[in-house]
Image (cartoon, rainbow, N blue to C red; front, side, top):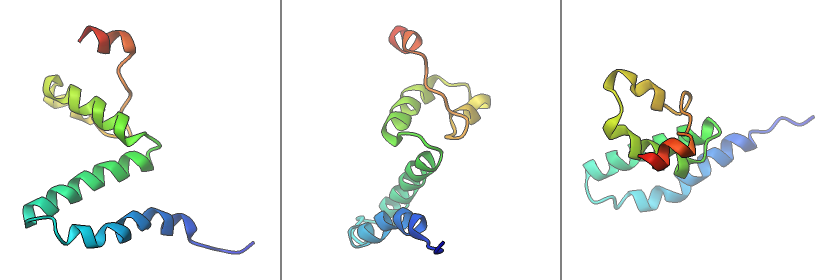
Length: 89
C-alpha cells in the first residue's frame, strides 16, 4: 500500500487558494479576525460538524448562554438544540 498525504493536502488547499485574497484583508485586525473565523470553521469540520449549522446555532445561543458553561459550545462538546426548544426561543 502506498503512503500518501492526500488528506493533509486537501485540508490545506483552501488556505493556499485563499492566500492571495488574504493579502488584501484591509488591515492587520481584519486579517486576525479572518484567521479566528477560519480556525473556528476548520475546527468544526475536523469534529465532523457542518460549519454553517454550527456557527448559526452557537451565534444565536451565545448571548444567553451562562459564562461558566461556554465549554458546552465548543465543537467537540456541541450538540444542537432540539427543534422544540429552538422554536420556543
